[in-house]
Amino acid sequence: METAITVRDLTKHYEDVTAVDHISFEVKKGEIFGFLGPNGAGKTTTIRILTGLIRPDEGEAFVAGFDVLRNPIEAKQRIGVVPEVSNAYIDLSAWENLVLIGRLYGVPTQKLRENAMNLLKEFGLYEVKDKLVRAFSKGMKQRLLLCTALVNDPEVLFLDEPTSGLDVESARLLREKVNQYNRDGKTVFLSTHNMEEANQLCHRIAIINHGRIAAIDPPENLRAQSMELQYIEVAFNKPINPQEFSQNPNIIKAVSAGNKVRIYTANPSAVIEFLVDFAKKKRLQILSLNTMMPSLEDVFLKLIRGKEAAKQ
Ligand SMILES: Nc1ncnc2c1ncn2[C@@H]1O[C@H](COP(=O)(O)OP(=O)(O)OP(=O)(O)O)[C@@H](O)[C@H]1O
Ligand SMILES: [Mg+2]
Image 1 (cartoon, rainbow, N blue to C red):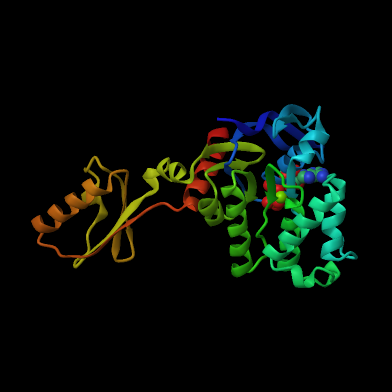
Image 2: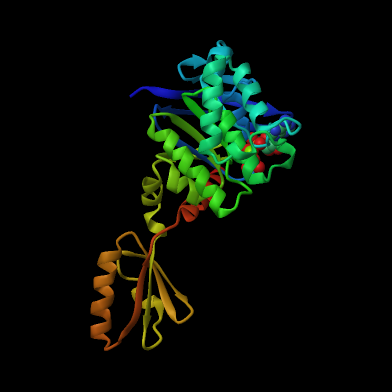
C-alpha cells in the first residue's frame, strides 16, 4: 500500500511548550485520516509542519512522496489546505481569490479557469463569484476555502477543523464534498475535535493529546479497545443491592444508578443470560434492560486519562 503521508519523530517546541512531541505515523493513499484531539493538543502545529508553513525542531515528514523539508515546493504543489483561520483575501472577489491561488500553484490559465468555474458551481458559489469575500457569511467563506484548496487538483488535502462554526447543513455539505473528493482516490488529513465527524468520515483516527499520539485505529477498533466501558442497565420491579452481582466473573463492576443497576462488562450477552436467570430465581420482573456501547467520546476520554494516569 502506497503512503501519502509519512511522519517520523516529528517534534516542535515553542519556548517552554512542546507542541508536537516525537510523533510518527503513516497515512495511506486514498485514506481519510482523522487527527482528533482537545484544544492545544498539537493538531494545527502538525498541519503547519506538513504543509510547509513552519519547520520542525526534529524529525522528518514526507507528503505525496516528497520530503517537506528538502523538497518543499514539490510537496506544496501536490497539496491543498483549508487552514484553521481563513486565509481568503476579503478585499478580492471569490473568483479573484481562486485565480490568485491557482496562479501561485502554477496551474495553467485555461485549466485554472475551468477548475475555478467547476468548483464555484459545485459549491453553490457561482452566482456570487464576483462579490467581495468581505460580504460572505462564515459558511460561504468556508466553502470558498475548500474551493481554493482544490483549485490545483491536489493529491492530499489538509483540513484543519473545517466544519468548526458551521451550521448543521453547511457542515454536512462540506463533509459530503470531502467524501466525494476522497472517492476519487484522494487522501484527506482532517483535524477535528468533533468525535462524530471523525467517526463518520475517517477510515482511521489518531488521537493526539499534549503533542503525543495516544492511539491510531479505525473508529470501530477504538471503540472495541474500550469494551470494558460498555455497560448494561437493568431495572427490576423491586430494589436490588448491586453487591449481589459482585461474584459473577463477567461483571467488572455493578453500581446503582437511580432505580436501575448499571453493570460494566466486556461480555454483555453472558451477563444478560445471568440477569434473566437471576430474575427467575428471585421471582423478580425485569422492567427494562439496555446495553450501552461506549461512544467515541468515552473512548477518547479514557485514552487521554489513561495516558495521564500512567505518567503520574
Ligand atoms: N506560534 C506559537 N507560539 C507559541 N506557542 C504556540 C504557537 N502555536 C502553538 N503553540 C502552542 O502549542 C500547543 C499546540 O497548539 P496547536 O495550535 O497545535 O493545538 P491544536 O491541537 O491545533 O488546538 P486547537 O484545537 O485549539 O486548535 C499549544 O500549547 C499552543 O499554545
Ligand atoms: Mg488548531
